[in-house]
Amino acid sequence: MSTTAPELHGRLGHLLKHAQARFAALHAEALAPFGISGRELAVLLVLSGEETPSSQQRAAARLGVDRTTMVTFLDTLEGKGLLARRPDPADRRRNVVVLTEQGTDTLRRATAASDEAERRFLAPLTGADAAGFRTALRDVALYDGPA
Image 1: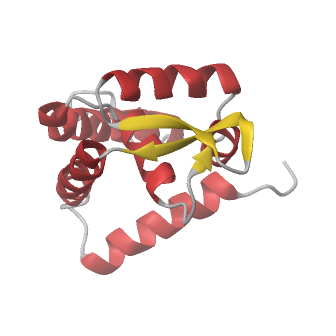
Image 2: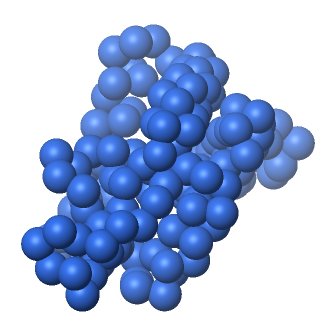
């Protein structure tokens, strides 16, 4: 970013774009050994966070994606051997999604690599500033008040 016009260095859109590009590159590099993307890691995290096996619809709602996108994610992750779909014992008309043993192991290792990528991304900040940055981003991203 140092080669861009100084007039842009204070513009939020410019800063967010470049910060996201830097983080995406670090994250993709960290996850490459596991053969998954950041969005696929998010699916695995959501599925692992359920106390009982999640339905495809519930997982899609928790991720904030539509049904078609969720099916694509699940098909891909199932093809990689990271999850399995099984009939719901309570309602055989729907499927539940569970991580396989390989999926659980991949999730554990990929999460550690993702955490390291986040640490590298936030390295220019002090611990308190990094925590504040994360909190501020969450507040902005989740804000649902007046425009």
